[in-house]
Image (cartoon, rainbow, N blue to C red; front, side, top):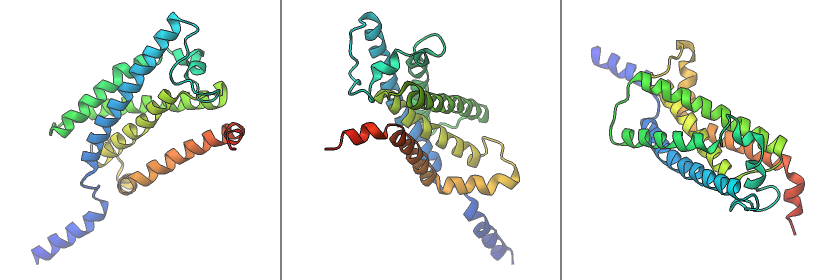
Length: 215
């Protein structure tokens, strides 16, 4: 009688078990996302320095009136904390990459470390969405390198959070545990919708410009 009970218990638990690959996906997202974020942040900082030393310099990512890094770099929003925003990325993204590589190598990080990482990703997520709103609705221009930073920060936050929720690194009330596991099962769907909403907002805000590019 004991064996059937054990089997039934395992069957009942399987639907709420997070995908076996979620931890591995998180490690890869941290590694690749951190590397791409580092590259974008370093490039932005170099472009900012060149612009500061030569006011006539045209950044390489200034393509047209809308896709224009120069227009964004010259605004107060580009130096929210009194120094160029890319410095934050230059400091943070290499750490993210290092954590990802350590996880891929089999490192087991303590709960307090995951909590700290999650708090950092929450800050990053809030900051890039604030910059998104400022760029789209206040400045009226988009910085391609900045958008790369946005594009990697969102999945870094998303998978760090999902891993924390499903692996027990973040406290989840019992009543919300099924919801957490459901989000883990549909992780890519949620992320896709998230990006589609942002793309739709950009399309709507600059619709007249995109239409003007059509033959």
